[in-house]
Image 1 (cartoon, one colour):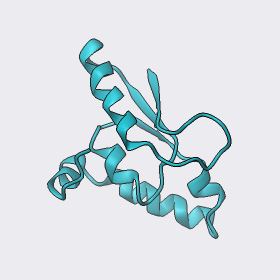
Image 2 (cartoon, helix red, strand yellow):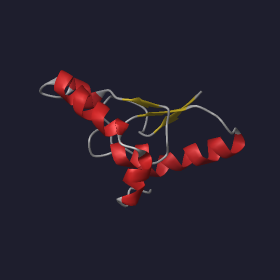
Image 3 (cartoon, helix red, strand yellow):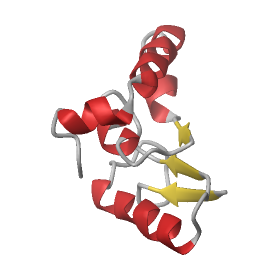
Length: 95
């Protein structure tokens, strides 16, 4: 498994770097079948960009810790993560 970092390392809550998602494609070309985790900046607004890359795991921190109701936010993000990536791609979610 490889963890693709999609923020500048440092303090929690940094901005999502969508251009870093291209690393996933490169890694999978080099190692077919590789499991990938996307870590950094994942929230309601960035879920689509990450999901179209078909990661096996999404590491979510600030979106939960800073939510008014973390349990509710978890449920929302869980539902968004369950949307088939092809559906996202059909909505112009490609990055």
